[in-house]
Image 1 (tube, rainbow, N blue to C red):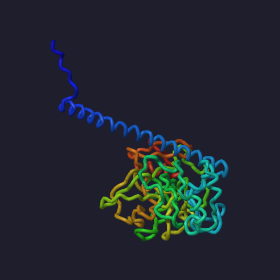
Image 2 (image 1 turned 180 degrees about the vertical axis):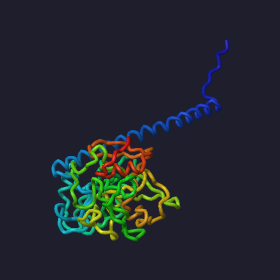
Image 3 (image 1 turned 120 degrees about the vertical axis):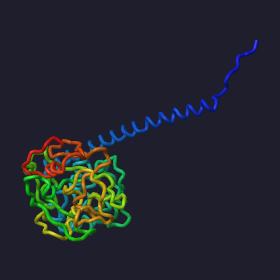
Image 4 (image 1 turned 30 degrees about the vertical axis):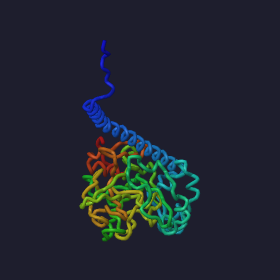
Length: 345
């Protein structure tokens, strides 16, 4: 009797069919994997902001006020004046970074012009809580006043208020008009109507008259913008790292119009969430739009998440704010005491 024939391998056609099926399955699974990964990153980003909210409230418990958004080295935050630190520096002891904070000095232009100690202390230090895991922005500041040092670039930004004219029936006066320079260093429109504001004016929970659940403290600037010629640019309020703050003790509008109104680590709401495209080509236009490379005070809130940004409110809760939120609602959220009702967001 003849033995039945045995197949020792796939035919070429069968092998090609198997490969095609595997390719289709990979094509179907890859978007799902990416969605799961982004969902995890968005949750981690939300948790970062939750911890930042706790740190800000802990600072308030100890000092009976929130930290200023950005300051000069002047009492009660330092001595000697000129460029000082940011809220990101002031809350370091409350995010388990007391050892780093104790190495910092605040004795005259410590934020940039006299920074050897601070920039050396922060060299190559990674603070994961200050960066959204979804971001693809560079991890280190564009440049450093101390050669050879790298200071981490944050992707979270404080809310210093909103420009006038965005909230119907409400007139905002606490802002300055920018200088005339398109690039460095007129900044844009800097407001003092939010909860993390430039200068040394203390903002207490009792000062937030609109209610802590209706006022934003911190949100995101964690994605690239695009200029009119299609170039991707990494413009945001933490361009030089998390240290550099503000050059005067005054709070808008007391600063005076014109001059250097760059407010690092905070932004003044002027545009919709995730308005990422169509900006003036480099170096941008500080004077007319407040969106520029060095550094605009009106760079919009933005993220790498689909559909909006994470934000921590003054009550410590974290919300995902849709980029479909109207600009007047966003301005109300950024203003601590406009006295108007905020619709669901």
